[in-house]
Length: 130
Image 1 (cartoon, rainbow, N blue to C red):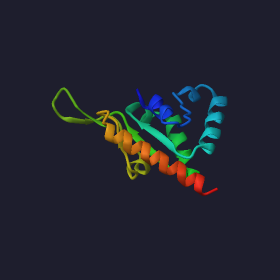
Image 2: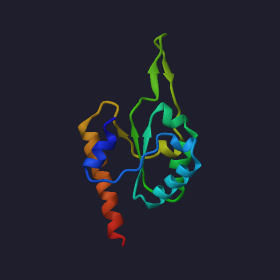
Image 3: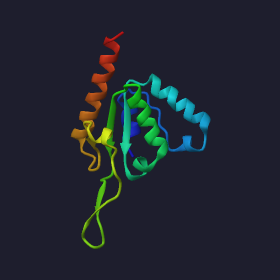
């Protein structure tokens, strides 16, 4: 995807977990430390991330320590099956469902601008609080 390079190009430092923490507890501790230091936590919402126990723990931990969570949807939770009926591919936790979402399924530039603006606002609020 293009989310990582876009965030880095916008000047944000990014820490990303691609399920390596499931096999490496030491890496998991490093990710918790990174979550403690971040000013916002982006949850990339897809079938894989919503079914990953590690991803649930990470965004749950971010929520627990009151980090702003920004869900970015890259895959629809529903698909039209071979029978023509709508099928649910993954469920979204109710805490995530209540948040403002950024829809990257169609790679809409307006959604990217909205995410970037939210990130800059959160970063500025953190700087102003010091």
